[in-house]
Length: 359
Image 1: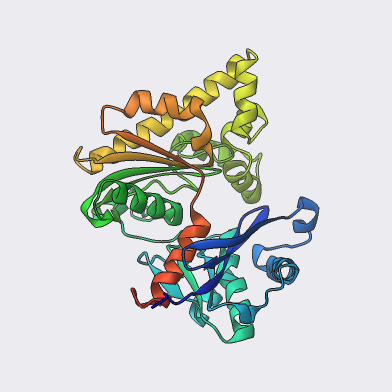
Image 2 (image 1 turned 30 degrees about the horizontal axis):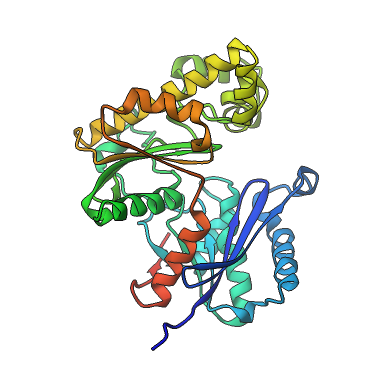
């Protein structure tokens, strides 16, 4: 008896592009990246305002492939910054859409994933899902204490890709993710370093405000110096926000957000570029060491993933500092489209029950 084929549309909005794919069960039939010029995005005041703009581009791309909403069994979008929630596959509901549209926690392109998925799914009366959203929260209670009661530590990390690569590494060891302890590192425009204890992300730097600096984000900063800068009178709230989230990190030092360009500068003898890249690797390694301590040193593997994991300059230097903790596995790139498809497929096959977002 042949296995039933579940065709899904997968949507992953990013800050300057939208990736989409069509999957038949585990097989990718079609993948496309739609670039969004800054001149187009500047027309919208808020991220949520981009919904129809991106939706129409997706529908046009599907039409070119002679696909419509009725071609699919489900539509799966990337999960955005919602209220803290368990990992898993969630049905898009009204409460989720309201939270994403109002963005009470954070404006983020990922917030569009569920909104666009729900609109397309509604055209055909099929389910819309999200999987392992950014706001997945499995933190141990001790990890929430910051040192100031008003400022609880939060969980915001690259859950989708990190869970996906962790499952693959566990499978390569002949084990289930729930039987392994990993430190997983996602290196991208933001950097997440998280300890996986028997499959749960029990701690993490919040990639928007803590941990290593990234190509465009400042990461953790000296608190007292930051306080003085904020109250210096030289910056508005929005200017400080942009400084921390868009124009900080490697960009603030080198004027580029592309690690490849920074490496070329270093190769051409730019000592500042070499120092900044060394510092990024140094901070990543320090964070891995801290998360290994969370696991009491019982670490089966350190896993490095994300786009910057293609940089041997960075990975070699990180491995040199953390190799004593556990064997290091480097899995460059991101598995997000596939991970979204597999999360939806598990539900369509009845292997998992979809979860309900309560807000």
